[in-house]
Image 1: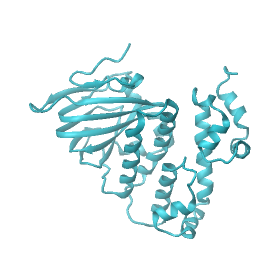
Image 2: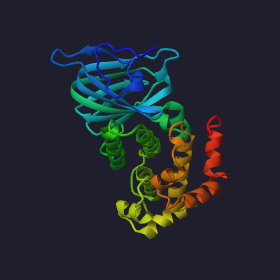
Image 3: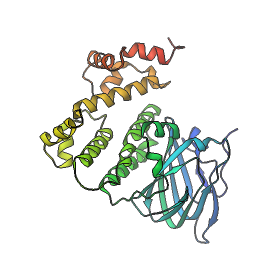
Image 4: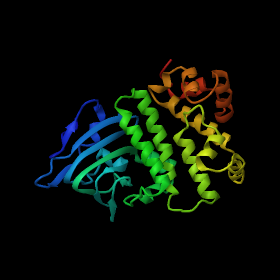
Length: 309
């Protein structure tokens, strides 16, 4: 069955395709006399979607229905303008501009937007988030304040992704979603304050994930953005049995493996994928891939897509 428009919500179907299914369970339960129904837009992004909510002066809610699609997703809401109050999973999160909050699709929620208010929402597969970032779903319904500099970094990076998503190709949107899944892992650690080694390490990992496709991503660049020396950064990673370079290339290889497993992206030329993720040549990439996964990228792709030639 095709998704049906949600009562009281203005939807923009342009380029939304299957992403409209993420809107089908939302409904407006009240609206200020002077307010307008919120306008929602959606764009598919790989296994998830990007949504925008614009308007305010309304209360939007979702009630869990057994077996519905959105019970298998998690949303990360970015408060772009105005204020809002989220009631979710037994918690109440007061949101102002720049704040973030996770919403678990397995629980009901109500979003009260008393005045002019805009939000952006990243929709992610729940099982992927739980598997990749253990413990992150324990933060659902809690305000992640935009006053925290790392919160702000994640907010700005995700807002930029959503702002440009409609103009991207499907392959680029799929890649943006993969980057998003990596980036939100930083939000597990933000309850800790200060500038100690643990904090530096966590911020460095978030920086790597945010710039993973940048060919100029280096340990020196990461250290400069933190305002510390390259030697200090190396020491922080060495204490944890690794190095910035090792983490960068390991995560790039994992990202390429995910893309090779994706139905459409997996058909792209290996050289294109290698260059897109910072490798200097296909031979360089193939050697590194074999060392990491025990087989070459072509064999990996054939195993991921046995029905394709």
